[in-house]
Amino acid sequence: MSGTVSTIEVGAQSARSRALAVLRVRSRAMAAALLPAAFAVVLVAARATGRLAGESWATTTLVVSCVAALVLLVAGVFGAVVLRAAPAVTPTVPLAEAAAPDLYRLVRDLADRMNVPAPSAIALTPDCDSWLEDRTHAAHRGRGTAGAPESAPGAAPVLVIGSPFLWWMRVAELRAVLAPVVAGTGPSAHPDIADARRFVRGLDAAADVGNRPGLGWIGHTARLLLRLCRTDAAEMERGVAAAASDRAQDVDYGLRIVAQEQVGLAYAGWDRLLTRVALPAWRMGRWPAHLDTGVVSALTELSRRDRLAEGFTSRLAERPACDLLEQPGAVDEAASLLAARLFHGGPAEVGPDWSPVDWAAYPEEVVDRKWRTEAARLHRALDALAVAVPEGVPAGDATAGPTLERVLRHLAGTGTGPADAQGPADAPDAPDAPDALAGWLSGDLAREERAVAERAGVGAGAGSASGSGSATARGVDTVPLFPLQAPRSGRDLLADHVMAMVCCAAVDSAGGAPGMDWLDGPVLLVAGARCADLALPVLALVEDGDPAPLRDRLAELGVRPEKPVRLV
Image 1 (cartoon, rainbow, N blue to C red):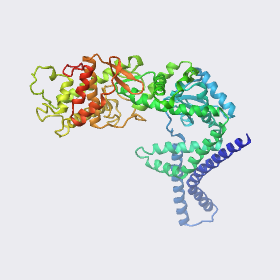
Image 2 (cartoon, rainbow, N blue to C red; image 1 turned 30 degrees about the vertical axis):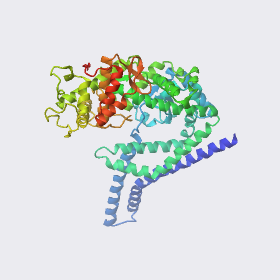
Image 3 (spheres, helix red, strand yellow; image 1 turned 90 degrees about the vertical axis):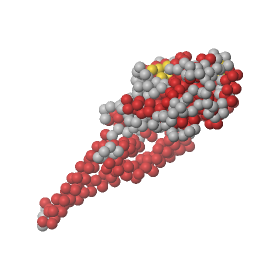
Image 4 (cartoon, helix red, strand yellow; image 1 turned 180 degrees about the vertical axis):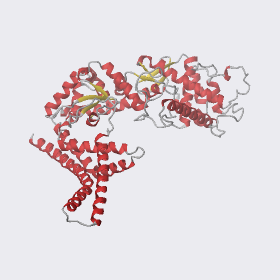
């Protein structure tokens, strides 16, 4: 035990020494600001005692005094900005003690066991991570950041817990994962470390303030001071982390190894759930209201598919950590809405074009609507490019309407093409049918996203033309802080739209149905079975202009390409 105590002390001592180095930067900056004033005081005193007589010394004293006053004014303004500027605070879901008394009790028990102060509050984040966050700046200004409970200056930091952990992890696993995080309140309570952190956070916030017009000098000065203390601040945080990790060594150490495996699994399943399942719904103006509940299903499915995860599902018989909440459903819904804000840029509140969707309704209200919206956009592109009816087909034939046959023939280059050379102004000047369609789709999506951004008042760059689904007038209140997907190429968008048309045709003419896979998102069900082998035939059509593989597969499924489909 003595060895562990000495290791903790070494880490804490290293953190304190680095904190003092950071504070020395502050002291030197203050000394530099006071130096002209000191010179002015000396000159004024010398003039008053008659030691510096003459007009030249009078002029010098006046100039130095003016410079000192100006420097003090500038330093005062800069100091006020550093003191009052609110650093970036992670948007979270506040969790009052009344809403989770058992969770607060667990955290306090951990803190008592490790002899460290308990966190001042607990908040949840829709991500697979946990950390301590000092929010004294926000409290000092008398206001909190969205979703952030205020804390008094000098109070212990807020414990932020990843909400997927509460649903996937068992109580004992969550306790083991939180132990080293909670242990970090010990070094955080040291006055020098707390003071150094406030100084660095204030400089970071002042650097952001300096990006505003007319305040560039504040940003330049703040960045200069940050560079001077950057190394010491980083080493201070390493020392704090080392001391916290060593302090938590004796708390559920064996279980922590198993719990860390669950952290990695949770991250993998959470990422798939957001990118494959939640993102299509967000783009349709709907947000799954119970993402954390869904992550359990997604991770259970991942455990079933991945041989490395065998046996993990047996854990589900143990008490889940979400039992520590009084109303897990309400907390899950709040975290799900925040996830939509952070990862997609959706509004902070429910509206007519931004409504929740339950998992049971997801296939019908999201998947089917997504397919038909994309199919409608694809046919608008064909109409805009003046794609003619295939030769030999009567003008009133069904193939002139929204049919898969029209898409197949156009992309294969058999009997179709622009009847006129007229299309949208931003359509690519290329004879290649896929490129022309891809360019029109990209332009149409970009126009829709720009319109949404303008209605929301966040500028033309707020949206991304990589999405699919209807860009309605729901608007956004912020650009996504952590976008899930980079912009996609025009050919990728075209493949998505052709696939949507194929799915619509399968539903309308072959008894197919929209479905959802917990890891892969929207899927097509035919005769109750998942039809997962359409991607390659669609790519052969889009990339090579070869419709044969897709036609063969459609024939096997009983899909009739010539039959019109229902669009939105």
